[in-house]
Length: 402
Image (cartoon, rainbow, N blue to C red; front, side, top):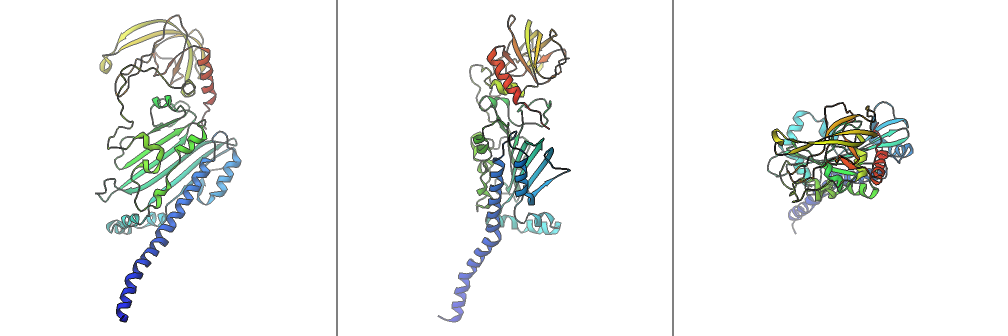
């Protein structure tokens, strides 16, 4: 064989091998290490039990992840807010690049080329909050950047997955616990200790948020936070949040382009009574009153509720079960019980208070100095020993956030 032909043959065989070796060295090796690091941090996150794990557990986490950890102010057993942030390889180079360099990278589609080789931009953050020697708060956030979902425009889309621990899952008033929680209260009938939801208004992103209480079983916490980190260095990029969080597949949040944050369901033919666990209701209510109805009158709705008749009930306060209510026993006031909602995939039973009985009224505010109050769904419960027992259990679980 002529030498020139042999050299050409060697070059044709060695060039792909060299390119493959470069891909392994500069793409797959750092991305695989990043994936392993993400997995270890997630395992440490899942090993912590809020309201049970203490300062020693927090210190072990800080010692192991100190290179990637940070905090503001002081951090000790009395009070500490600690964040661990893991980033994708070459993130510091891309973020610190001059504008002309960033423009050049975009113009030549270098990021897309790298993604075809298994390099993907992902960030994983874990936050823990310590108060009086106990870990009281935990959050995790995973961000995954991919090319646009339809693969037509040279644009980017971002997948977000967030989990957070909250002592209560009340969607309504801020009360003592600030922060909006995604997901409707009807979910609490099926799983009283967590909610899932997605926001509206994000055109180039998908975001799923899981909020759970410290009393959710550990097996469920693991299931709801088990991210598929295989997406990080795969040759085919994951393009849906359900690819990264398998538990979210049955929620169908992004199965189509709809902007509706909750799956649309067909309303049942018969009105459905409240099914939510009484313990969860007691935990999430801002105020709970034991009352005795005095009289009820019927009123016609106006405006968009013109087709609905309302009950207006006047009742006497017997005692306050929960909440900083100023009014003393014997105080009388008016309330509109939940009137039912026969639209938008729901058919909810109206709730009424009958004279001659006693009830527990659950409110989203502890201020009663209004002309009348309005009770939300599941806001009227019969006064029985078993109901009171479950309400008290929920009240005990409602611990204030720092």
